[in-house]
Length: 426
Ligand SMILES: *Cc1c(COP(=O)(O)O)cnc(C)c1O
Image (cartoon, rainbow, N blue to C red; front, top):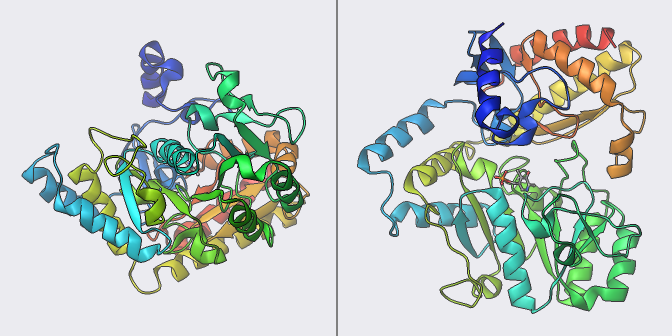
């Protein structure tokens, strides 16, 4: 038995499923999770000393590479000054100013400690601002695990939502309407009927939690239009895409301006940070200015702010996102070519520093129904072959992959060499 297996056996006795977040348990792909204890650049080292080229990037934050020396050094300095003071610190304002500079749709921002908190709070703000209860989300988009957002589509598109988890009251889920991602006609029709009752649309401007599904032409513009017509707050959940697909996020990439934005992942540079922000007239309803309550003991923690700020500074290096996009392109076009050579039905996309792939003949994949039709057995075989060969991909067919500035051309060539072997085994 290797050390990861031993550690997993011990973990299962005290942590549900042996993990603190379900996807880490490897249930989708079979086998046992790898335990890591070191990271550097594009690589992770497991507890048995084996090295992997990593495409999980701690689920997105590690855009400058693991254990970047500048980030680590700044954190170490900050730690020496104190772990937190329970009072305002200057760095909270500096990080806020930095975010507002990079994402001009945000005029005011509040820091929280996770993406879930950010989306949950943004929904509360939108409801408080509009005085409405209903929200619209899209099937296959993930916005964290708060009750209002763990909802799937009901039996018909215009019916009330149903809980997507035990423990979520049906009466609460009933306020959430779930529509099809990329179906602009359905959005227009729904808003013609009930638009004036909808507090917010929340959407991943590039869906990244059902694999990667980019927005169809005109989809985000349609959301902007119906929100303008009905006084509905448009929330872009950029927890994954913010500072990941472009310096200004998906909103700058596609040129559509939301009313509110939620952030997480990269904004914390690997530490627990989330944030929600937007138009000042909307953010003015947040306590202590307004009547929407929101708070956090560790919100704006100076060590976490330091990691985030250091990361946001590094990604502003000239050409950073161009180089990142080139690497994603090198990887996905290489995968596409090798799948073709092996006669495997395969569809892959990338935007900036994120990528995704599906074992399917649907090309492009545009929504949840096609995602559900992709071949998960082939994914599992491919995943396990890659892992065996030292390539760490997300252990689920419904996750995106992440590239960092530390991934070299050689790393990607090595990954493609392994992929050739993995495709041949399908
Ligand atoms: C990761 C993610 C979340 C949840 O963030 P946590 O920090 O895991 O709570 C919300 N929305 C999107 C789009 C995400 O990718």
